[in-house]
Each structure stands twice: as C-alpha cells, then as structure tokens.
Amino acid sequence: MSMEFNKILAALLCAGIIAMLAGFVSHKLYHPHHLEKDAYEIAAAESGTGAGPAVAEQTEPEVIDVATADVAKGEKLAKVCASCHTFESGGPNKVGPNLFGVVGGDHAHKSDYPYSDAMKAEHGKKWDYDALNKFLWSPKKAVPGTKMTFLGIKKPEDRAAVIKWLDTQK
Image 1: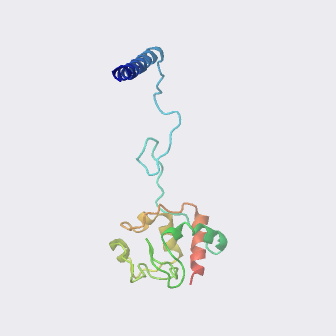
Image 2: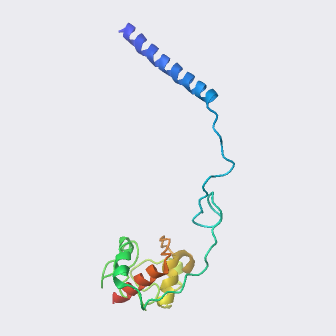
Image 3: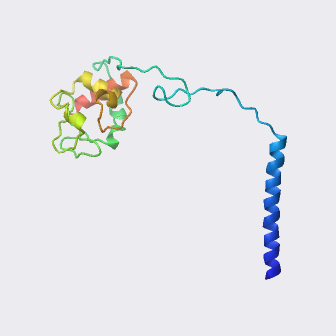
C-alpha cells in the first residue's frame, strides 16, 4: 500500500513540475503584442459608460404616426410586455399592472396595484399617444423613478404599432 501511495504522489509531483516548466518556457518563447487601443470599439449603451466612445444621447423620441401603424405587428411586439402585464378586461396584475383600457386612461389607473411614488405623482394625467410614445421609448426618462425596468422600444414604427394595438384593448 505504501509503495502505491508513493507512486501516485510521485506522478502528481512530476505532473505539477512539468506544468510549471511548460508555463515558464511558453512565457519565455511567446511575446504577445498588446494593442494600444481596442481594434473594434464598442459604443456603450448609455453615454459615458463602458469602453467605447460616448453615444450621442437622444433627449426626445421621434414623433410617431399611430394612424398608419400595423395592429398585427403591435400585437406581436406586445408579447414581450406580456411577461409583466396582462391586457384582458379584469385581468390580474403581474409584475406590472393590467393594461386593459390604458390608452386614454389615467396614469396609475389601477387602484389595486402598488405603483411607484413617481407614477402616483402622474395620476390624473392621461395616457394619450404622445405620453405612451415617450414612456415606451424610455420609461425611466418619461417618469423618473418608475419601477418599470424595461429599457424601451427604440424604433418609432414599433412604438406606434404597440400603441395602436393597445388602443384596441378597450
């Protein structure tokens, strides 16, 4: 038993020495060339963060044309929203409130949903197309302090389609 243990220990010791020696030799033989700057710069998601150059920050969303928007496309895009919201009449609240009848309704319209203080402060204002456009573009910019963590829909035609579909949910 003692002889087997010594053989195993010697094998492990030799393997460790060989690994260390291989690492030492490879560092002596190979000299990597480090670039002065990244070969491909990646623009950061928010200006001033990350390794890439600052992205020009858009302060307002583009104007949208809801009249010509595609309802079917809006329904398809709204499936992402369904992970946090329901849309049917009398539907339950999920992470976010039920959005049935949201277009034309008041901000913080559901009495049984715990809105953020920022959204409660907006109560009484209407969710018209312009307000929804701004909110869907960037919830955090439209209502600073909102609990909604969604980053927003950047394409104006996609926002218009979602708003037009939401307008059918009455």
